[in-house]
Length: 137
View (cartoon, rainbow, N blue to C red):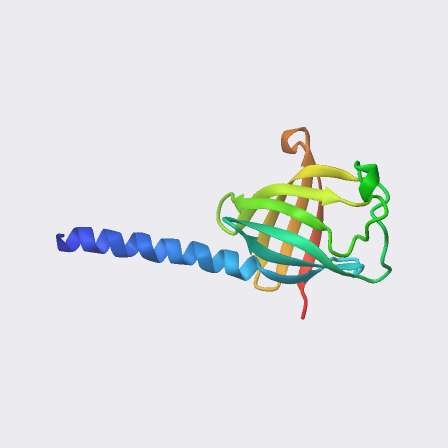
């Protein structure tokens, strides 16, 4: 290999490493802005996913579209599904909203080391609701 090829290969490997670091920074436990729930974001295969690990007032998944799951607790429910990179410090996937039992196109953006913005959208992103989460212990 020539030195320019080696330099290009090194630059690509550094960029790939940076992408993995960003995903690692999005992982962890996050507290909703309302303080009502904590969601743990983890790697799930080649994507990120998020599971409710705590609720201030534990509830059942009464609006779940599957009647057999309506008595299941929200704690333990996966609410962020298949989040894959969609730009710098941003992931796209699906967001399950236990308030209405619907799944929306979702975007997660790492705003800072301790702040995450979540958006759930309909109509191809024309209408979105957002929530800002803070990193929790």
